[in-house]
Image 1 (cartoon, one colour):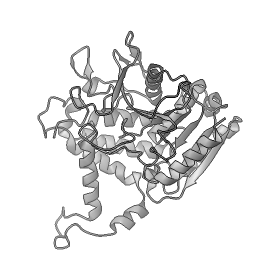
Image 2 (cartoon, rainbow, N blue to C red):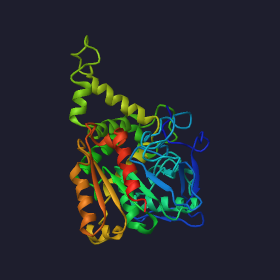
Image 3 (cartoon, one colour):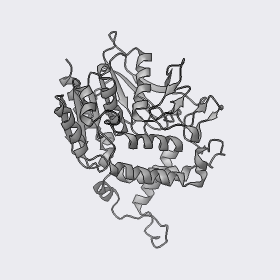
Image 4 (tube, rainbow, N blue to C red):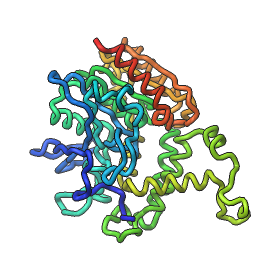
Length: 383
């Protein structure tokens, strides 16, 4: 297994397309860092209408990428992460809409991130890659919209970290969005989220093969796989719910004939190991740190005075927010806060609740319910 699961130049491109962000100038970041060159990888489905008024931006979560819809293959190791929400007859139908999903800045599946080559050194950025924020992600996405000739998105939609980007789109570019759907997300990262994130990041960097973030020249099998897999396993616990674990695994063991050894496993342990190993094959440890930290930094009120002042910028934009009943990471009260904040400034907001036992991952797994709510919202805002 390579030291990183990042996509590298020369790898099969699959459905990826690429856009340079302002190739004639550097890209300044909110935290003070600068990237001399930025490339964004994206995928599209459907056709842009002659009036360019049917474009929908789908924003992905922490370990997602641009492959939101489609099959797996040599260039895309997993099927589309929102199959069932995107697709013919689904809420996001390529027969009606031009759907775009962009691998975020800092990601590892074609967009500029820590595994990319730093033009100043001709080596991967690694530990020198700067801290980024959701606002940096959105500014880079806006450049892709310019590249595609899209002045206004019909809808910007996403869950979790994707929902953070959705909110920033509405606040930063209210004239470039017709409607917003931030799902299973929050106006600001909560202490609960930050605490879980910190434990995961610490687990990752304690892997001696992390080498301070500069591991890209390591031989195959000698990357920070254990650290990244452990971080993923920790996250997988709070991505789901206690009931979902109880129903799926109970107290079943892997081998009933072997239960008294210190490392004999319950089925839930085997599942967490599997989830960690699966992520290692398609993700980069440094990107995990950078994007995870960007989520912790998310706060729509930062440098804007207050939540009210921030949200007032999207007062004219209809908003759909959605909760998963069993979500322990972004519980429904956080989406109610979004609803109340939009209503407080005289905006239009709908709050929908999906009864689903899969925890935070419900926004990915309850595809029929999520799809239906998005379809209804698109119909309600088709003015």
